[in-house]
Length: 91
Image (cartoon, rainbow, N blue to C red; front, side, top):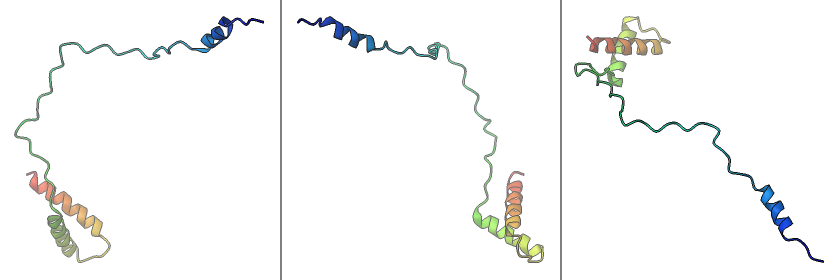
């Protein structure tokens, strides 16, 4: 009994799926003209001053003493010292 060899091959070919189509559209290629670059910040602008840890410690201690050496306010004194030092440098 002879079997038809084309039938099994056809079944295998039916199971092969077509390549998937991209679901999202592809973005168009950029044009030759680019948008103008933003202007750089003026040269006169100062960089933000960051006081050193030693400067903050010193000022925080001064605040601590001026407030009557009250314990439990170390974070408050530290933050106040940092704000004051930054404000002085921006003047």
